[in-house]
Image (cartoon, rainbow, N blue to C red; front, side, top):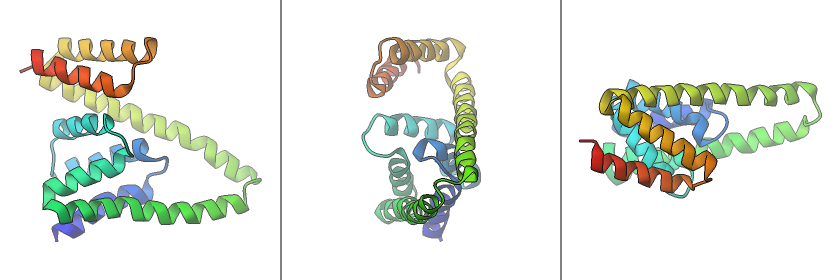
Length: 176
């Protein structure tokens, strides 16, 4: 039964999510944290931060980690398969359909509406991580990490992996 739950937890977000890994992270969080309770919001945020520091698509890393934590090697395999297979099949089908109707004004309008929806979902995820961080670490530490990370990313064009490592070091040194 746990394998079926793992399959559904990653299959559903990958079927209804459009826009790649970052777009389905809030959907995966809703399943893993909200529906099944396999992780806390804080644990999910930490897993996401570590996953973002590693190469490869984030959705498969999250699926592999959560699947392994929940049901070992078999769970990791099921969760990764549930993440990859539906996306691959839907992408092949959608690509053929969109290519056939590539000049249609409806298809062009539909594509324009995807970005704002993804932006709102990412804003909601950021807000939830911010409130979780404030509850766990306090306003001062949250603001310090957020401001320094923003400056490093925007002003100095620092690679996100180094920003995550810096935040981990700061948390290890100053947050108990």
